[in-house]
Image 1: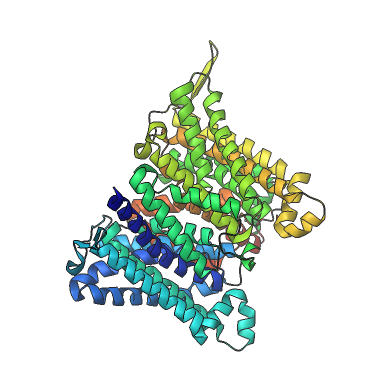
Image 2 (image 1 turned 90 degrees about the vertical axis):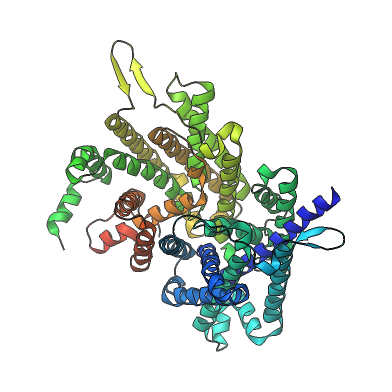
Length: 290
Length: 331
């Protein structure tokens, strides 16, 4: 019983870390560009599909590296070709433009890889289970968790300890000020969008063996990430981490006790948090509320 | 530029007459161009949905991104009433659909009306998904994945006098058209009323509206409820149209579709925008999905071009060509 419980708890925590990775990419773009990026989910899907093809050619580790980079390049092309044109307009246009892009890319996925789904086996070295002493746990999930944690750590180091990270953080507070200080704002935005896409892509690669891949996976992955952003509070890295864990653990434990409600509970959690703290756990007042 | 066209458009006088005329002859014209009446019916239903949605978006400046939930709730309200309560009295299932959507919309509106902007969009979206998952998982009541099927369209009868059976596609079309007209009349009355004026102040500047002494919370909440009621009405019609209620009706992608319809029609600046938008959207979707299975790519590309090139939507183009000059909703 206890090991069963721990298993689900761990599953939830790993899921939470992955959701945090997706959510961080989404909220970086939201923070700097004030664009609700509905293409985030489909970029996640593109990452998973690219990895599906690349794994056969170059193996898991290279796929894990190359696929997100390709997704980031795709993201930067989309940003500099299309999305940058609507920054001056109402936020609604960004939301609709990315929604259309998502629709087109989902169609493209169906064109290239076909409309049916695939299940993806975990890479051979991470298949099976490992004895952690207090419980036996899936090797692949453990690896997912560790990689996601490293990724979040790397992002934290980048945002908190590097100059360019500081510029990005400043961009989430006031883009005009950043521009006034002589920073290249268009390049910053393209870079941030690329980074967000990279995070979506790598999360896609990592989750593919767990969720399988199908054309609609992007729209499905969008929502939990969004819940994490709302629960954690917009623009807060720590908030996203805590919210990711809350959402993950709540989902993981519901899977154990009442599986039917598993995809519902995160929305209930969100409502509860929202009623208690309207700006989310760590959110502060921001321009996004106007 | 085209003086003949503009004269015709002005001759139509009130846009409602024009719309009425266009839609009234549509069933006669459609077979000539190879269309089917169900396409026109779907356009009308989505127009009602779009108009209801536009009360929030175009008039109050609130971007709800979970509006498919209220359409779906309307459909389920109608279906559940038919299956478990009564289908004898024709208006009872219709009313229960509308009321279910309206009541839920009121509750949701009560929770979220302090918010605005992107936060408002994200919250409505997530709450919409909550209802989607309830519909999807609560097998005992909603039928889960298989949905509720075997619905019937009501028939009006006065014994000995006449019988209107809506399972006839043409009759159903005119029934929906009538509903659309009633909806338009009511919504137009609302937006031109003092209440509607306050909504438009909220769109322009909520803080200022509050300083003027208006309790914006209740105005927003009421607006959300009204919008929910009419979305529910659209849902009821949609359930009649398809003879079933599916959880899919509530899925967030459909919420995106209605925002898209409203915007490409030009709902931000025109009361009638959603009608044009629904027509363009549904015709395009039908056309591309009949030509290729990869219709999503084409729809995506077309919408991207449309949004970038004509951010004011269909009515924006018309106005630029001085063909049509509707009352603007924004100052």
